[in-house]
Length: 306
Length: 246
Image 1 (cartoon, rainbow over the protein chains, first blue to last red):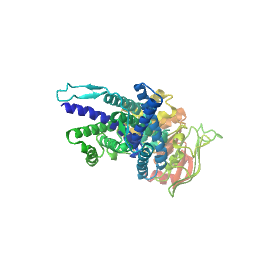
Image 2 (cartoon, one colour):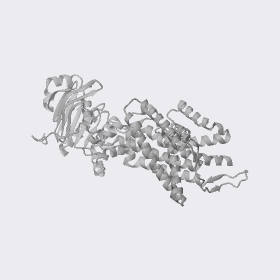
Image 3 (cartoon, one colour):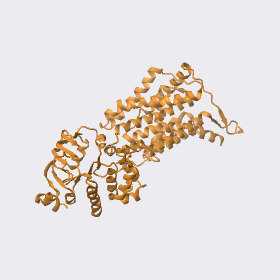
């Protein structure tokens, strides 16, 4: 029971990170019908941006207050990653809009390779360690099972931040003009333009929001694992994509639900079976979902698309 | 016809419009005028190029040759959303309401062009015109019946207080009673508020009775024009569009 509780805590933490990345996949798919394969690498990039910003703040500018540094790093990483993703869309995807369906997809794979190689060249191929941060750990049980179930400040921070961001994001999509414009473009781009919506600008904003959420996940990733590598975009990226497919691609609540499920599955699999095959578990889910439930848990059947 | 004062430039002018789909020429030099305060209809058989004419005004597809002038300004090369922001509203072919938005949200989409300047007032107005929409306000657009969707498409267009309302086949697939109701609303808006309407219709009889003036389109060209009554009386119009198919 103690083990279960501990794994539940770990799984929800990991799932929060996956969920935040998955939103970027599902939003872009919803609005332009394209799987943005570079999204995982954008996430990786944001982790590096966060690390570099943190170093600048603490080493060069001697900012002593950790919470202040965290807030600045978070906002800075969100803004810079958004700028990257905006540029990627402008350079690599927008010129191909209206071209054949596979063209932007191939362009996205190219972008993914470019980003990971770019980071490898400028940051080196080795793991970059993040500085050790203080991390208070709460003991939930008394340790009668031989160990104590713990909940760390980092985990609380990650889950709380995810919940707050998702609530804000949900409000944006449901109750603002911008969110309505996004949903309109998702359902009928041509009609949206006939109603005066700037479709290109709306798509750009979608990439910006997706990148900002991925950047939050990137910052959390650095904090949680304490290390980042140029290749770290690929596996979390594919897992977040799996989460988006499992939840139903195009569905925002689905992306979050899928992220949590993938996080939990991965953690429980590692705990009760073997850590070696934890990635296999996640990708098996992808295969099973695609075969038996292609529209996912909360997704719409493809035929309903207009 | 009162508002179509002699000498004043037409609100909408199409001059020598030629539009292509790939290599196929859909429009072969179309000239149409719509004066402020008028109801003008464009009739013709399926595939004659009526909807293409409508969409060419919005630049989707873009005219290869010719000019579209709105209020004297050349809008031929303007992006679609900027054309819409000139207060040209459209109830398109197939209605194209947003199926996964509520009726209320669909109307909000219509109002976004003029930044919700008089949202409450306009909402009351369209609910008065189409009381059914008020009952359906919290429902998803996709769950409405065909007639209700058509009402919603027109109401959504009216939410922007358009200077020009363009209706593409509003009668398509609807019960005669609903068609009558919709046409009455349009006639009423034109009479009371001087709303300018450009109507594309296959249902020639209803359209010509409603319109001040009409154009007949055959194979991408305007072959006849005149007042609604004139066209209704023309034997070739009767033979082609009234007695045969309908």
